[in-house]
Length: 148
Image (cartoon, one colour):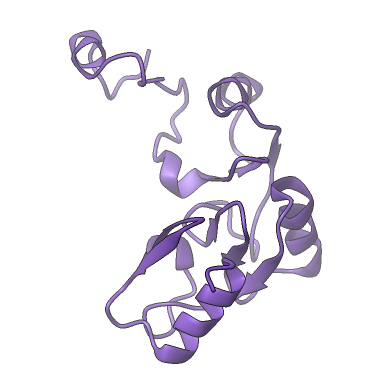
């Protein structure tokens, strides 16, 4: 079990809780996924990767984006597309395209923030962005996530 949640809390919340047996417990910052695959922080051990794969039901690979290990903080993915840090390397973008099986586009959000995963919440039907996101950024986000 996780050192961050008690057994009685798991019982109260219900079956949808899967404590991750790893110190990298901020899953939203460390996992980038859609219905086709997941790219995760390269520091996850094999046990954590196996649990992530079991829970999500998709192939899981380790990776970085722009050399950054917290992939969920610097990218957002849906089943229609993904947007990521503007300094993502070609090989990293290829890994995202192959694993997530969607087109990938670079952008910023919230008036120049490269950590787009911290600025955008999205699914295949829409997105919520930070209030400071510029019209140009919004256009790139809409295009990259296939929202129009």
